[in-house]
Image (cartoon, rainbow, N blue to C red; front, side, top):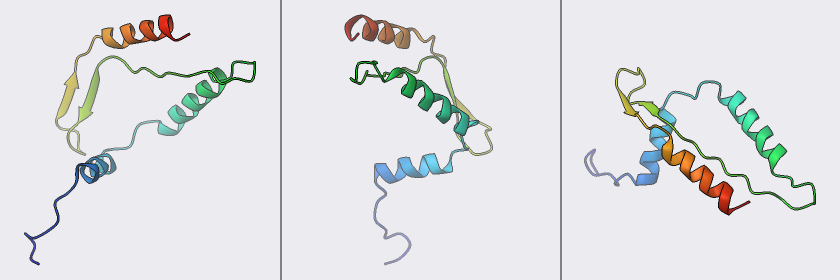
Amino acid sequence: MNSTDHAPETPTLKIKAFFESAPPLKDAAEIQTKLKEFVDRNSSSGNGKANRVVCVTSGGTTVPLEKRCVRYIDNFSSGHRGSASTEYIMKNHT
């Protein structure tokens, strides 16, 4: 087997490699702590039954294409779809 004869990379491996090569999330530990506290605080109904917790992200996103952050992909979203989704969930699932 030479260097051109190798098994094709699966989409799962490509996705994993992408996230492993991306720069770390700024303040990841603080974000994880706050999210866990929010879920813990809001997942208990007080009557012994668990509440569902839905996390909707919304708005624009900027993602670097390289480690050195020279080029980006931007999504100039207004957040309308996230807002509409949240309103729907609140009206129909509470």
